[in-house]
Image (cartoon, rainbow, N blue to C red):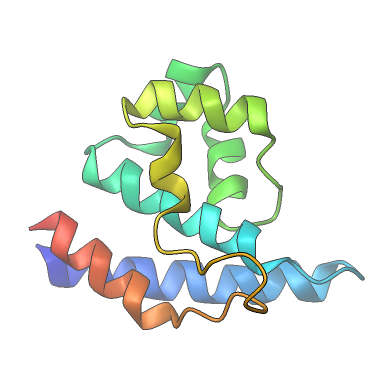
Length: 121
């Protein structure tokens, strides 16, 4: 099962991040990309479809999809609501970030794909 999840995650998220950059004049910040990836990883790990998570936090599945693909930024209050819906601590979305002041976030995408594969097992 984890191969199917990894392929779907890699194909859907990789293209969507680049589309978000192309469609707007502003580049997507690496932190927003990380939060979107973490949201998808935590949601898949919890075996929740986007629609079910959306219901828990008062959103439509399309908005959850936009958060995961970085088309829309996640506000602090919505991040708190999502954490409650997923039953995870707020800090888990920031796991794996470099220390502040060390430069831009440059975590390879393959690490995220590997993590989602591990969690899907």
